Amino acid sequence: MGGVLYQVYIRSFADSNGDGIGDLPGIAAHLDYLTELGVDTLWLSPVHPSPNVDWGYDVADYRAVHPDYGMLDDLDTLIAAAGARSIDVWLDLVPNHTSDRHPWFGDRPEYYVWSEGIPNDWTSIFTGKTAWQYDQTRRQYYLHQFAPEQPDLDWWNASVRNEFDDILRFWFNRGVQGFRIDVAHGLIKDRRLRDGVRYMRERPEVHEIYRRWQEIAGEYIPKPTLMGETYVTLDKLFAYYAHLDLAQNFPFLRAEFDVDELRPIVETTMSRLSKGREPVWFGSNHDHSRMATRWAGGDERKHKAALFLLLTLPGYAILYQGDELGLEDGHVPADRILDLADPPRDPERTPFPWTRSGEEWRNPWLPAADTSRNAADSTILPYTRELIAQRKELGGGYRTLDSAPGIWAYARGDKTCVLNMTGTTARHDGHVLEPWQGVVL
Ligand code: GLC
Ligand code: CA
Image (cartoon, rainbow, N blue to C red; front, side, top):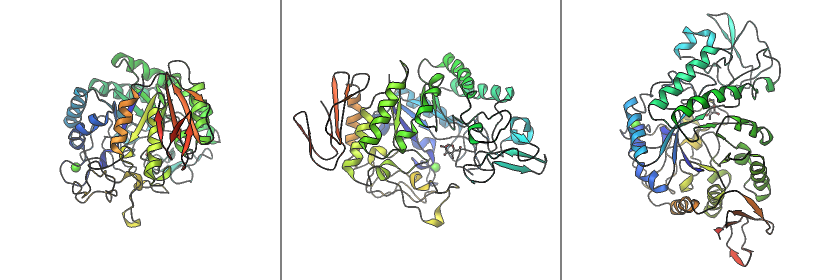
C-alpha cells in the first residue's frame, strides 16, 4: 500500500479557456503530465459553487461544480480520463461549515450551532475575535470557527449527518474515489458549549462520524478513501486513525528541515501507528509557505533533499502542485492580495508555471508564479519522477539506522535510504554524499 497524492489547487493549475482561472478541463488536458510524474491520486481543492470568501472552503452547494471550473460533466470526464490512467480522483469535502449563502443557512437554520447570547470564550481562527456572530433575523448568535460567512454545522443534528451521507454517496456514485476532509478534527463541538478551545475542537465524538462514513465508503471503494486534515499535535494524531484511513501529519510539515526535528516525528509516527495503518507526509499545501521556500530557502539541492525524504519514507506522500518543480512561494503585491487570512495565503496559491514564458496564463486571477522553475524545463522535475518511480522498489516499514550527526539513514525493507541533511560533503558506510544528497542503497 501507500502512494503519491497530488494536490491540485484548481484555480491555479491550468486554464483551458483563457479567463485567467484554472479549471477542470485544464486538469484533464494535463493528465499526461501527471501520468508521467507517476502520481496515484489527485486531490482536488474544493470544486463546488462558492462565493469565495475563503476560496471554495465556503461551499454553497455540495453537489455541483463551480461555474468558474466547468460543469458537472467536466468533472465526470476528468474522473473517467484519470481512471483510464489508473489515477484516482479525490474531492475536498468541507463538512465543518458551509457558506452563509448555502440554502441551508436560510431554510434549515437548525443545521447550525445557535445560542441566545455569546455562550463562551471560543474565538474565530480568521478574526481572532469571538466565534459567535449575531444574526438579525433569528436574533441569536451562530458559531463560526472560521469567517462569519462560514457558519459551523451542528453535527449533533441527525439530519446534518444524513445530508452528508447522501453527499458522499452522490460523489461515490460519480466515480470519486476518496475525500480529503477539511478541518477533520473540528466538526463536532461540545454539546454544552463549555469555555475553552478543547471544547470547540478535537472532541472524541468526531470518530463516530468517520466510522459511519467508512461504512458508506466500504460499499463503494475497497481501498483507503478518507484522509483527514487533522490539525493536531503528534500525540493526538493517532486517535484519528480509528476510522480515517489517513490523518495528515502537520507536526512534520511544521518542523524545520532539520534531521533532529524531523526524525523524531517520523520515529514516533511509525512506532505509534497501529498495524496496517499508513502515515502521510507532506511539506506544502495551499495554507502554508511552500517547502521550496520554507524548507529549502530556494536552494535546489536542499529542495531535492526534501523531495527525497517525502518520497522515500513509507506510506503516502502528498505533493502540492509545483513541489515537483521546486516551485517557490509567489510574489503577490499588497494590492493583489485576495485571501482573508493574516498572513495571507496567496503566495502559495499563485498560478502554476507550465512554461518559461508563462504565456499559458493570460490575466490570471493571482499574479503568476515565478517561471524560472517551470514544468517545461525544471531540472528538479526529472529527479522527482525518478524518486516516484523508485518508490516501488523500496520495502515496507521504517527503521532508523546508525549514522553520523546530520545524516539520516533508514531501512526500507532490504533497501537503505541515506540522506545528507547538511550543506557539506559527508560519508556513510563508505559512500560519499554530496551536500543534501540522498541515495538509495
Ligand atoms: C482548512 C483549509 C483552509 C480553509 C479552512 C477553513 O484549513 O485547508 O484553506 O481556510 O480549512 O475551511
Ligand atoms: Ca478557465
